[in-house]
Length: 132
Length: 138
Image (cartoon, rainbow over all chains, first blue to last red; front, top):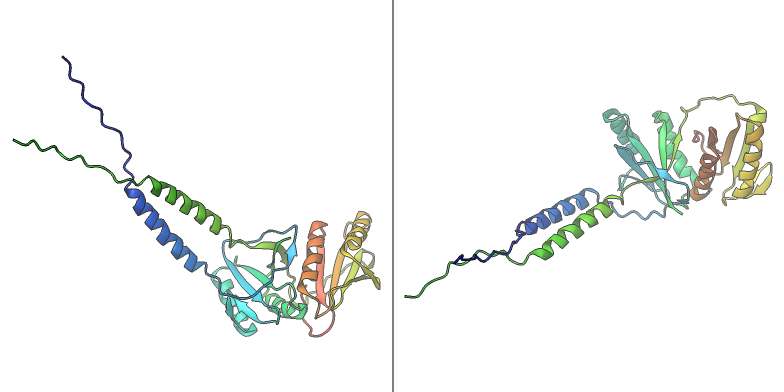
């Protein structure tokens, strides 16, 4: 008589998934810290035909409604913006400058920043908007 | 004699973890798209640079401090400005548009005109501050 052996149920080992999930959590938390944007109240201007303007290297100049200027989320004077732009441009000439201004910001404040960019001969500038 | 059965190693019930990992990946892909800036690229000319444009090729608009758009002294809206540019662009291939912006004009109105200029594929578009401090934008 032939003795039939009971087949074992095939089980996919998935214990490692908990490790994967844990590593992903750590990774996401780290990325969230890197991309953390400090709280600056900016109501973006709207446009329906905006294109993606982010480049490999980016530098963001924020201008709030009262004319306060920020560099990558930190308060900065026009002088320190000029200094930071010079440094950024020296380190990576292809750095793209983004102007993120509140929709109600008077133009003269933006003009001040543009004047610095012109002085430094930083040719291409991105005016950031949100989709209408 | 009591026979002891060899214990089989079993894996815990961890099937739900694959779902969790999948959701985390989706979450990450979604938040990765949050930091992309969208807008308009503009070329800035060098400070105090001069460009010669034929008078007939020049189309000038003014934006006052309340954000109202004017052309040849008359109030126009964006749709009218678009029609004007379209008409003139047909007969003037080297059309140059200049926007004079009042210092207190809201940024949204300037952006709206920049959007119009880019939509119309105007090669030569510039804006400058009409009063107040010197050293205006292009």
